[in-house]
Amino acid sequence: MGRILLFTVLIIISISQVISIKCYACDSLENSACGDPINVNKIDVQDCDSGDKSTKCGKAILHGNGTSGTLRGCANKQMNCDSLVVPDGYKMEHCSFCDSDLCNTSVTLSGGLLSLFPVIISIFVINKF
Image 1 (cartoon, helix red, strand yellow):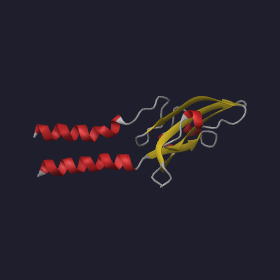
Image 2 (cartoon, helix red, strand yellow):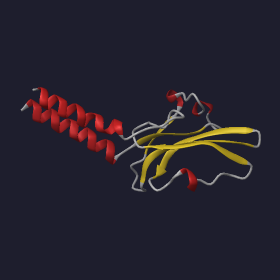
Image 3 (cartoon, one colour):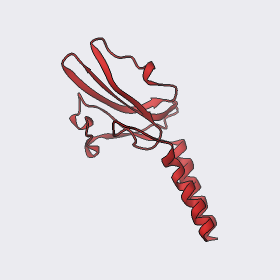
Image 4 (tube, rainbow, N blue to C red):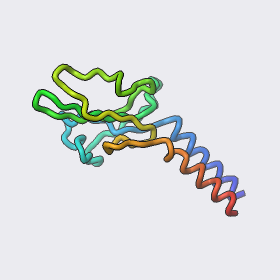
């Protein structure tokens, strides 16, 4: 009975990671804590599960006109680095997307494998007992 309950809880956690994603949402020109390295204690967290197809997190770093800015937030699942509009006079130094909670903190982003972690653990636990 305990194995079934554990397996069910881990599956629910896995599904919730796919259904809803949270991202850091900020602009370093308005909040210096948004720059690199990010100060997550001073950054807003945005729930991307708003029905508008925001299913991944993104980060972009722009340079130009004597300034540098880091943007973080939710992104539409069809969005990619080529589809971003960069303002005149600015150059995009970095652009990345990821698909796990609060994954848009570092320059090198990855995702997907973390959402499989609960499933892998549940398979291990079930086979162990």
